Image (cartoon, rainbow, N blue to C red):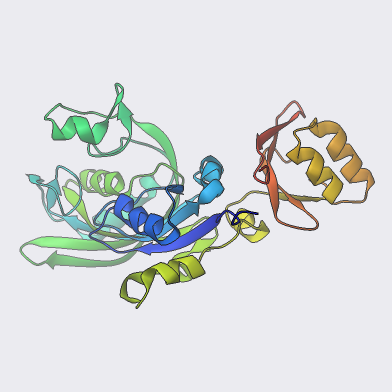
Length: 315
């Protein structure tokens, strides 16, 4: 028999100054595999939680990447850069807003909002990444899209700070696809100023906090720390990401692994007194066997039809 495949997820605390790609490179070296991916990038200047998938768990990325996220950041008012972060070139200056004006403007950025992503971002515009077009000198105006800001708090405000600038420390809870750099830009424009994001730290993905993440940088054997920190894809992980879970008997799990029709399998599971999901549940559902780990992801549509998303346990 061969060596069992390494698979699972890793909560990684990325340091500022390295790209998410570079952080993944260290994970690839630790596990000696190219099957490594993340479920949402962090800018080079930012720090905090990266949810990394290893081995066949990489194929679960699309179900993991839709989770809400929480951040703490620092907005520097008075100066806007082309990248909207500390690494860009200055493109505009603005007046320093009062704390009262800033607090009065924040409510319009809570809830469902339309946001234009930064020109320097990974989104695609006309078939190319916006950041690639921007660096080549091509004017980029990404279209606005709907995102949700569930909470936006002003933690502290220092004005002025340094050479005529002010800083606002904020905490944000938002949906997938929200750019905090763009939020800083738009808040500044709303108070008649210009700004960029000085610092950013992602503190949570779904129910997974950065406090549970590992930073192996100062360890004597960083690779060993990473290997020891790999988590299996269990019910607690899926629940933390907002995915409901269903547990089925081993025979039902085996039928799913074989790709047999789901409706009769689930009907039998119910008759076997296995807890079943409420009828209101739609979308992806994690299926686990009573005698082991994750079987796969299935989905129920509005038409009450079940379909396979991905069979994780299939060899």
